[in-house]
Image (tube, rainbow, N blue to C red):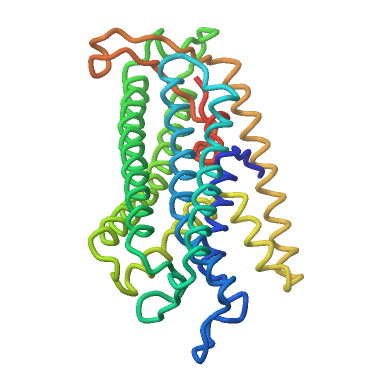
Length: 340
């Protein structure tokens, strides 16, 4: 199974990889556990500058990814198309342009004032600038981005609740607004199967968004703690370390990645590999049959967008049905995962 992924998703993953590498820079340079002498000035300066510029980068790419998802849902429910190339380029370029500017600024500050570049293991396991402005400035930016992420997550949850309500209404009282049959045959079973699929897709997506919300709350809490107390201790460092792990579980648990992990685990065991290949072939045959079944269903039952009356859904106009092609694609490629 192959899942199409958007450029904002790749940007999100790259930013978190950069952030994780930054905090391990002393480890990779072999200076992390040398307690007898300080790390080299150049390495320490680079790590200090990047450790301050990386949180805004990851916050901005996370916001860009969720904005892409939210805007796609919004435009779909309004019966419009998603934004064009200009908006996508902004979502991709602005986070990294800001990151470069911040990194250069912190490098200049540390280069002009070498005495500010320190590594104190009682405060943090990585290098930092011994001045109150950089951490407070970065925490304020990160706090604003974390708040924006949580707002978007809340808006997404509201939209999904509305879509779930529409799906339930379309199942309970189907009408010309929701399902347009091409013949007078029995479509009850087909409607049930489509309703069940959409319900399952939304439930799985809701779980992923809930885990995403947990990460947003952690980032928000860390930002507030750092603004109030610069020497928050090791617990805040551990909390920061959980964020990329949460991202890994959100996206690394998708179907194609799970298949990849399984292949890597079974690679040293040829006998298990053969059994897995046999079962995979069987599942592929079932998938092809399911695709054929869906194509037959699509030829018999067509879904058409329709603006509901103001009193039908929460007093506002909305597209009656959004079809989720695959929950796996909604977060990583919203423009392909959501159709209407």
